[in-house]
Length: 124
Image 1 (cartoon, rainbow, N blue to C red):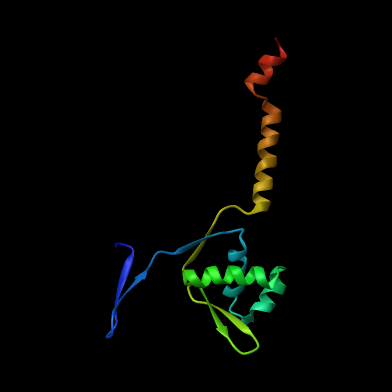
Image 2: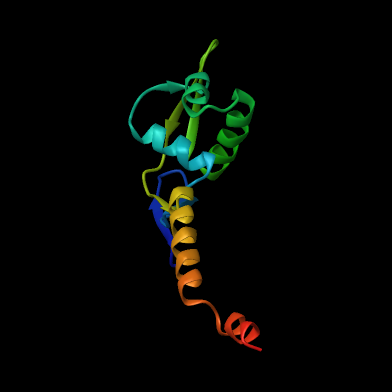
């Protein structure tokens, strides 16, 4: 109960989670949230084009974000507009390009030093 904030409404008592939402930094969810953070009014179709994914895949992702309370969908007869509801989002994890650089750096160090086992095997 320490992370819940009480908001008193005349009709009911509402508990709101004040913990920031954590999203993996290299997921489709994070790419969509970063796009929405720019503040543009964007439709589902435009977002799918900008993120280079199919509308169906993006719609499944949006449904998950709607259930978490991060995104809302404003449906008009011919378009579905996406809107960001929360601003307390934290991105975590490494970027794939960072991982590649780290792997290269680690492999260079291991080639230079060599392990004890490989040296012992070589001189037996």
